[in-house]
Structure formats: C-alpha cells, structure tokens
Length: 206
Image 1 (cartoon, one colour):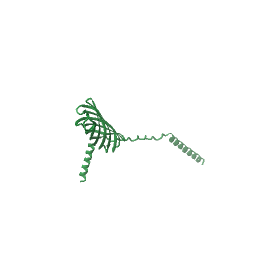
Image 2: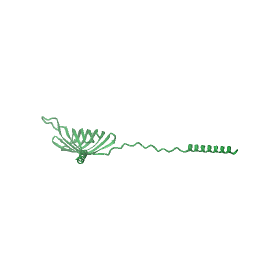
Image 3: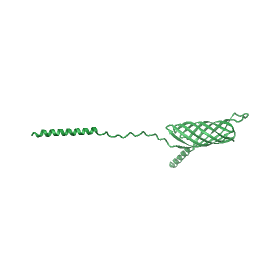
C-alpha cells in the first residue's frame, strides 16, 4: 500500500516536467514571419492618343505700306494641318507635340510654313488649357523666314475641338513681321472614329 503515494508523486513530477518543456519550447520558438505589405499601386496613365488637327482662322497684321482709305491692319485666311499626339504625363498634365504645315495669306500673298511645337496642357480629357510655342519656318510671302508662334490654347472633348489665340513673329527679308491670329481646329482622328461608331450603330439598329 505504501507504493501508491510514490507512484502518484512520480506522475505529478512527470506532468510538471512536460508542462515546463512545452512552455519553454513556446517561449523560444520564433514568431511567424509576416509577408511585407505590397507597394501601393501606381496610377496607370492612358496611352498616347494620336491627333490630326485641321484649323481655320484669320491672321491680322500691320500693312507693309499705308493704303489710302484702308485700315492700318490687313487680315488674311490662315489654315493649319498638324499631326501630333496627346500624351498624359500626370493626372492632370498632358504634353501635345505636333509637326505640321501652315498656310497664311497676307495682303494678297500666300505664305507656306513648316511648324513644330510642344504644348504643355493642364486639365482633363474633357477640357484642357495650355501654352503652345511653335517654331515656324518657310516661304514668308516671297522671302525665307524663320520665327516663333505662341498661343493660348483651349481644347475640349478629347481634343476634338480646339481654340487658339496667338501671336506670330517672323524674321524675313531683313524685317520683323508680326501678326495676331485666331484659330478654331478639329481633330480629324476623333471625328473619323465618331463617324465609324455612328455608322456601325446605324448598321446594327437598322
């Protein structure tokens, strides 16, 4: 009968030993590794959108020689055709590079010019505003000319309609030629896309 307390005591000691070992293993076991938080998603900008801008307007310049009974300024037709692309570089910032041809009438004489420019635009696809500096060179009404055209541009509805109020300076034939101009332009790429969508819709719902 004396052996029962001894067995009970041994069982208690064994249980205590197992508990101590379990607590020790839990204490020294390394904490589970946590995966690092994913980096914040970068905002994806839209793809560059090609443009083919056709503009019509008027250019107004001082007359080269006074004419009796006529105003001191002469106006003439101006036409622009420029190939470019609208490139989004930030949420509300766009760059609009263009290469083009410009036709301008001055006092009954036609001028033909090559233009190249890069316009920073600020806004959204629905409405943008910016400054458009352009290099201008070509036949300046009978003399080779080179100069700069700068304008304030507003563009609306994916650049489908643009309005520009600007100034042009040319050095040609030993003279400085200035004119002010107002242009209204449409983007032929967007117009052709709209016509194609309307034609497709008409064929489907006919």
